[in-house]
Length: 286
Ligand SMILES: [Zn+2]
Ligand SMILES: [Zn+2]
Image 1 (tube, rainbow, N blue to C red):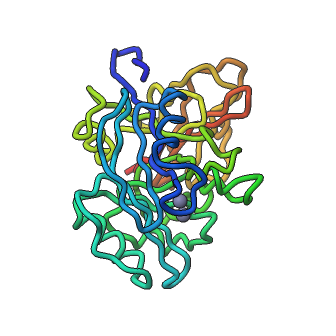
Image 2 (image 1 turned 180 degrees about the horizontal axis):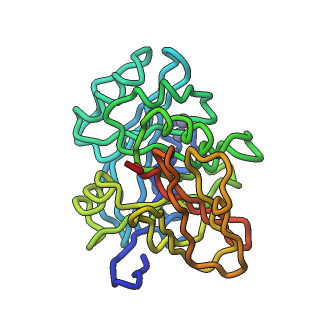
Image 3 (image 1 turned 90 degrees about the vertical axis):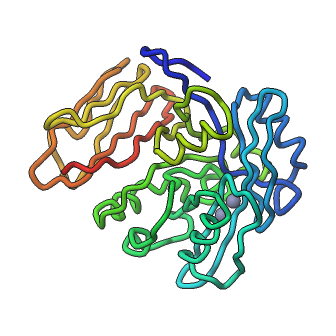
């Protein structure tokens, strides 16, 4: 947890992890211990078709979680968080049916690793009821695979109208290299189940590998970002190239992008000197 300049608290968490309850390498207890030791405030264990329990142990909030998947009309993995019971779902249903089942069980649904799954942007934008989508999924990257970063397909989905908070998560299987590589910070008064779930639902969060995003908002005709000292801030919108697309300067902590007449969405990526990124969600321009 850290406090920003206004005294607001931001809690660190991973919403996607596997254990020996499905295809992960360590037990739920061990998974929890490792994230605790690494300073995480909350964790959701999301084994395939196995619902984990919620609780509060040794300064760590556990959110109940599960990952559902289907091969109907493509490859779709839906992470469910905060469910009160096992969702009434089965393999072979559509992605939309899995999302609906998660919500009916009291949880919220996150679309996992869309780039890894090779999902089509139009299909993503048509899904209803998502509370998050992974812009970065650690285990989907090197050395296990090569499509950790979903930002391109999400820009295309944003062009088709999708506005869903962007999440980053390890999708930990405890192979080795994916651990602690990406996570979210959630802004909430306290690290209780109720407060964290409410903030996630409301999108009070950002995705990161390290850099902090202090501010991200549209002010008049500009999108303004403030961050921890970084090397560059890059803006993404429908503008293919503009002089203010990239703000680059050692130690940069503030950047802005003038919204262009044809922009409908805008988002930013902060990159620090170690090459680590943080991502805002996509904001509606008008
Ligand atoms: Zn998955
Ligand atoms: Zn997974």
